[in-house]
Image 1: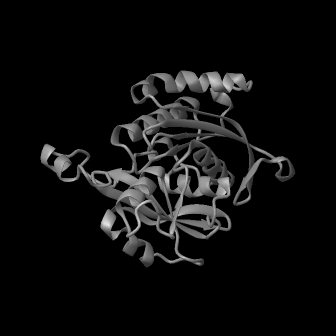
Image 2: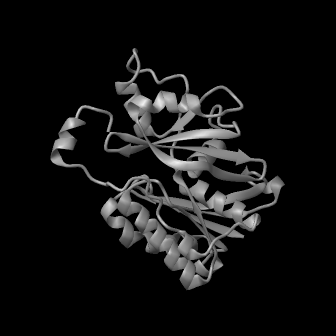
Length: 261
């Protein structure tokens, strides 16, 4: 079984494929799904992503003696994230799934973030519920809680927007089995370091910085949900938009110019 994962929610196009393996021969394990990484690559040039993604994918597969038809399931990070970038990832996965007749697995950016933290062995990421915080720009944050059950991973409730000044209170309201903590991406960590707290340069004790959403995590989630028979039809891979407004006026940009955007 080979699962493909695509994540573009961060603005960088990330692609990975994993292959199911025996537990004693696997590089990683996620909630009972044991797997090895086939390949990973990324495309940072935003303008080149839609042109290069499929050729680079075919090249990576060929480098491992595989073809598109060998893929078993296609997973995509549906967001929240950049408006256009999410459409690129979802469109590619939908198109491939329809053309190849393969099942899909839509996963959120928060789930990808929490799973990658688990795979990386990030400090305190073993908690069963992990609040995740992503930079939403426009002076706001995307927040969500991921529930990592014994045999599954899911977003608890809905993704939401949160103002920077309300973040600490939001974290305090979440339910944990361990001491309060939240995973955040590099942009949020930078904003907290520069603009929050009485001691600039020091992250709050409840923040754990991670690499953010990844294609490897998306692929792992795709494999896990395929194993649990929780796959979807291609049309289920729709971008998750938390806000309707995706741009600021000139006055609004000036108002937040010195804030953690």
